[in-house]
Structures are given as C-alpha cells and as structure tokens.
Image 1 (cartoon, helix red, strand yellow):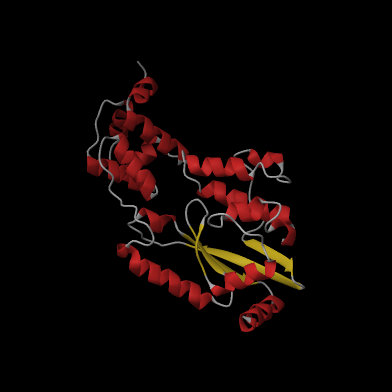
Image 2: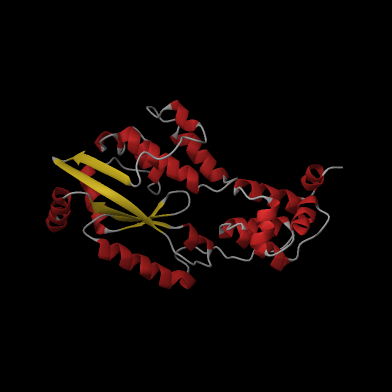
Length: 269
C-alpha cells in the first residue's frame, strides 16, 4: 500500500500532509525546519510513526501555523488543545483590551476599527463613528461585518469611488486571511459574493495580485470627499487564539483636505 493511502487512514498523517501542502513545504524542508529527519516526517505522514505532543507542536511551529490550526493538528493526533480561545471580554484579556482602547483613542480623529477572524467589527473609535454618521448608512442587524459593508449594494458601495477596485482588494485580503476548512467564512463568502453587482469571477479562489501595495479608499458623502490609506495591525506574539485573529484597521488621511475634514467632524460632534 502506498504512503498516500496509509495517510488517508491516519488522521494526523493526513492533516500534516494537507497543512504542509497548503504552506508549500516539501517533507525535506519541513524536516529541516523542525530539526528532524525527512524519513521521520515521512513515517509520521504515512502513519508508521506516532508523534509525541512536543513533536506535533514543533511541526506546527515549523509550518508557522496559526494557533487555531496548531490546536487542530494536536486534535488530529488525539492530543488536547494547547492554546486557549477566550472572549475579548474575558478578565484574562483585560490588559489586551486596554491596549486596544488606547490604540483606538489615540488614533482619533481618524477612523480605526477592530475586527475578528470573520471580519465582524468588535470595537471602533470616535473617528469611525463620525465617518459612519457622515455616510448615513441604513440600520444593520447584528454586528457590522467588513465584507457585508463593502460588498452590499446598499451600504458602502454608493459612497466609494472606484468601488470595484477597492472591493476586489478587500476580497483578496479576506481570502488570504481565511483559514482552511473555516465553514463560517465559507458561508460568508458565498453570501457576499452573490450580492447584486459583484462580478461572478470573484467567486473563484484566486483573483490574481492586488491592484495596489496598500488599500486606498475614497468616500464621497455629505458634500465631502474623504480619501484614506489603511493599515492593518496585529498582536505580534499572542498566546491566545482570539488575540492572534484580531485585526486593527487604521485609516490615515491621504491628503490635507481629508485631514482637515476629520478634525472638523470631530469638533462638530
């Protein structure tokens, strides 16, 4: 029986082979990164060798897997999860929550938002509230979601210049960040990519490279033209799944007119 067939019968062997393939690593490269022999990696994938818990974590680190995927790899080997996933309101994450609040407040009067792994908005500063008020968006059921906001025909789309280029880059980034096998993300993609006006070819997994080195978005609303460059910040060394999956998106004025308008909107509140 060949190794592929054996791996198919071994949950961990199949999971490791899949993770290695998704990250473009050969058995030899993974072995070098993990400090083991290529033969040992081959035996693990084929089910001829059962890895220890430390070995699973070493392989996950060598693959640079996100914490959630590292836990999944452990589960496939019949080990319990190593990394915890707390809610952002959890007392243990209070220091991180204070950091987020400081980041948002200090970015005022310019917009800044915190999103989770499914692009639901978790926190926002006053600058983001002022921008939302200017756009006069209709009521939204549940938490605001970045993909729905950008792709729905009745939300941000009427106010965004060159909407198709902006929306395409947002979809590209979302696909890049989505974890393999995430059913919630898959359902969200199915929903938003079926909205009226979304090009059908965006439903393909690969859309090609981004159109610009950073996301530039310009809004026209309320007699104002506001042009922004956005950056995304993450926690660098998190040991909690929730923190690793948070994204802090900050908007910086792309021109002097936008900078002045942001300060003016803050004063008008």
